[in-house]
Picture 1 (cartoon, one colour):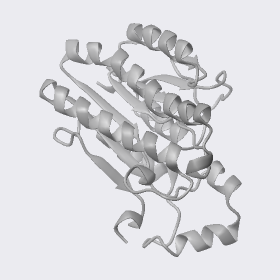
Picture 2 (cartoon, helix red, strand yellow; picture 1 turned 135 degrees about the horizontal axis):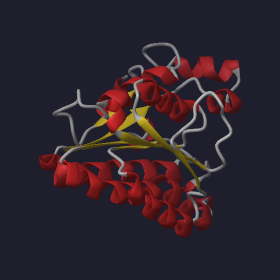
Picture 3 (cartoon, helix red, strand yellow; picture 1 turned 135 degrees about the vertical axis):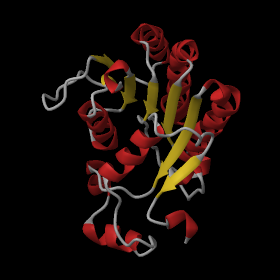
Amino acid sequence: MHAQKTVLVTGASRGIGFEIARQYAEDGYRLVTLSSSAWARDDLVPARHFSVDLSDRAAVDEAAEAMRGEAIDIVINNAGINKIAPFAEIDPAEFQRVQDVNVYAPFRFCQAAIPNMLAKGWGRIVNISSIWGMRSKELRASYSTSKFAIDGMTAAIAVEHSQNDILANSIAPGFIDTEMTRGLLNDAQIQALLSRVPARRLGKVTEIAAIVKWLGSDTNTFITGQNIPVDGGFTRA
């Protein structure tokens, strides 16, 4: 049954996206991936890969049209960027770039997949938001705006299409142990951060991927329109 379903995972070349793609592939789903560069991993080979600059709207539109032919059943919009700056100093072009990558691209990929989902009477969409799409933080205006927006779009899709068994949810990862996290923060900074996380540790990419995969499966039959934090308790502390 899984082999008959096609899953699109964006930002699939590393980190959370790669683990999501790996788990789906391991269970026999047909895998379509997207990243900003050509696929260069030999430990996982997708059925099709799109190399797209998500800040280029024309390229995103072209990819979205091509995706219509892939008969995508499950959309996982994971790709995203962050730009830190004081609010009054945000470059409008950079602000727009964050919205293009984090909101416009997922919007177009959902649009591309939903007609096939409607034809089959089944579909699942999981958009990766952030804890900064549930609360905010200084210097995060561009990113937070985009992540609140992706959650709003997810809720709108759920309201419109859940009656068609097209279930749409967001998840909001907290502080996750990825190359990006380790590259941005040293050990002392990570320990200081974790003092604010009730679980007192970083999350694992496997933990994020597991809930994404469950939400995007036949097993999930009634959860829709939600933004689910996976954050070790951070947003409740």
